[in-house]
Amino acid sequence: MGKGQEDGGVGGEEYLFKIVLIGDSAVGKSNLLSRFARNEFDNNSKATIGVEFQTQVVDIDGKEIKAQIWDTAGQERFRAVTSAYYRGAVGALVVYDITRRTTFDSVKRWLEELDTHCDTTAAKMLVGNKCDLENIREVSVEEGKNLAEEEKLFFMETSALDSTNVEAAFEVVIREIYSSVSRKVL
Ligand code: GDP
Ligand code: MG
Image 1 (cartoon, protein in one colour):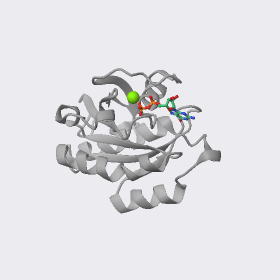
Image 2: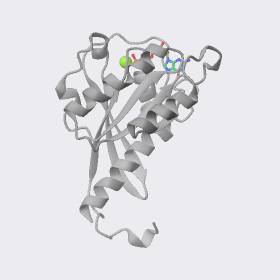
Image 3: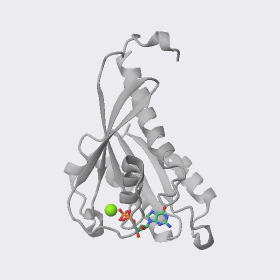
């Protein structure tokens, strides 16, 4: 809590957390990452195939935490996300597009894949992206909340376009990982 507790058990350590972005193609994963890491939005979805990650330093309660956030960079179009992609991940953002129900229906499959490759204690956030497109919404906030509750996930609706909740979504995941690591150390 207070500054005076800086040396209490976990002080002086370096933190590097691997976090993966998953979800159907074109839900906005790459734009969520570029909005978070560089405050940029790009209308043209890049067709790059491969794996990319960006490292973002986040301050949590005065601790410098490096979040290494991985983006599928197109692999998911072939449902061919490799096990290397998931390896060592301690957090995940499972993204769907609130204007396309099929992407919401895919969430359970992504969660299953995540569970087969990652520690089941990984911090998970269900993200309903493109909430700026209220007029063409296909998935209600309630449905998102219910699924998150059922699957024991955090939940937020975001917009990479207008920045709504983007930082908050990543930070909740990072904070959760940090607190579970702290619990282990203490
Ligand atoms: P990815 O395939 O999941 O990485 O999705 P992209 O980040 O490439 O985004 C796919 C498309 O959706 C692009 O045309 C983006 O401009 C658009 N997009 C991404 N996020 C948002 C958002 O929050 N709002 C709106 N309106 N469009 C978005
Ligand atoms: Mg992408």
